[in-house]
Amino acid sequence: MLLISYDISSNKTRSSFSKYLGKFGHRLQYSLFEIKNSSRILNLIQIEIKNNYSKKFTETDSIMIFQMSANCTITKYGYAKHQDENLVLF
Image 1 (cartoon, rainbow, N blue to C red):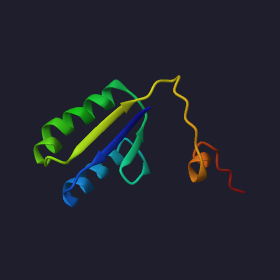
Image 2 (cartoon, rainbow, N blue to C red):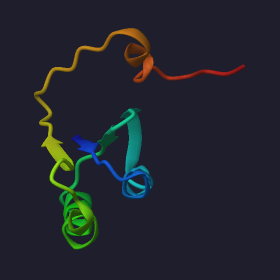
Image 3 (spheres, rainbow, N blue to C red):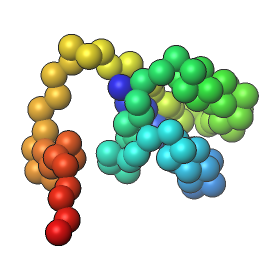
Image 4 (tube, one colour):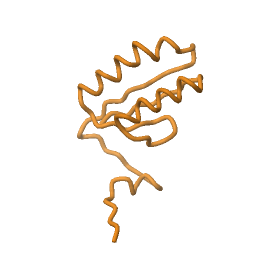
């Protein structure tokens, strides 16, 4: 799994980046996305950041990509603990 966190001051750039990440995964929190890990997707995202978004950064903007291994332990509380449950509708 990839976790991508961002802090971008420009509303336009931040909105564009969140829409871009939405193509690959889902939002966990306002500035945090969870994306299934694949080298192809990671390369696409990194190329897009370098070629498009990083050129628009101010001194305070940042994007962090965490590559999580299968051995990582994730403890969830509140709403997050229900994300992995299957939803059954009758």
